[in-house]
Length: 103
Image 1 (cartoon, rainbow, N blue to C red):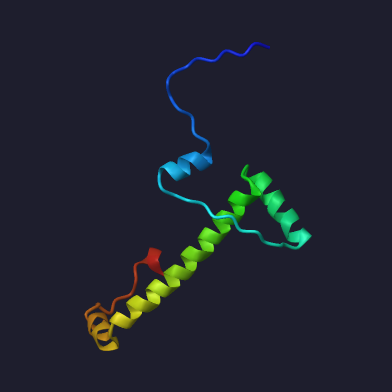
Image 2 (cartoon, rainbow, N blue to C red; image 1 turned 120 degrees about the horizontal axis):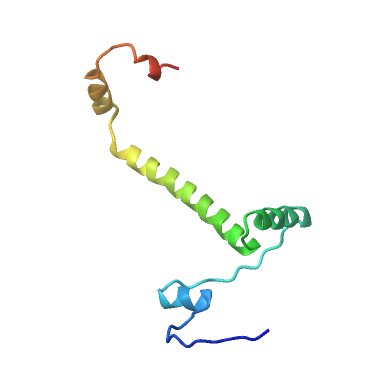
């Protein structure tokens, strides 16, 4: 099989080089996992066509996002007042919900 290379002048970067070029620097973390958990991760990663590293990074990002959301809601809640809430709620008409909105 012959290989043909055409120089287009476009530089191809590795994923690491690309991330560094746009200002994202990666850290390396070493962790120990039970073998059974690692096998489950490897299986899920294979199903999603991603690496175990990518799956772990995504899981951590989702957890951090959830925790930050909880903290954000707590902080926003501190800015509100029960009295103002009840005043606004009192303005809502007391009517039965539409059929499609009923539980």
